[in-house]
Amino acid sequence: MISVCDNLDDLYPIALHDGVWGAISDDYCQKDDFKFDSHHVYLSIKHDDVLAGFFMLRFDSMNVAWVHTAVHPDFWGNGRVYAKQLLAWLYENTDVTVLCTLVPENNGHAKSLCQRCGMEIAGTLRGSIKKGGEFLDQYIFSVGRGNFLCQ
Image (cartoon, rainbow, N blue to C red; front, side, top):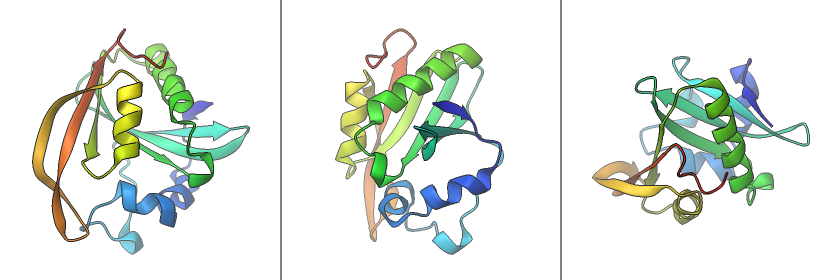
């Protein structure tokens, strides 16, 4: 189940988990200094009433949203289910017509999930994220309303 998170402190154990942190951060983001940006919308992902992860949404306009995902390792493998719930929430609560995300080139699981949900590579940001001392490319994935395959 997806719902607006009413307490960002609940999300820290997910974001700071050793199995998650490396995927959602870069070399410039320090765990000890990490704070959630209150300008974004955070959606809690619950799996059988247990907090499994969260989506962070940034709206560029009323119809374009960027999503970032963090899921606790105990719940990996449920990405399509969570993506379907996210899309249902977006359709019910927003006018979003285009959903976008950035995926570093070394995150094959996220790339695969995006593709299985109907997202396509809309572009590449060369050398745009530093991880492990190396600048990596990031793929810009996007999908328009009505083209989501995980519905």
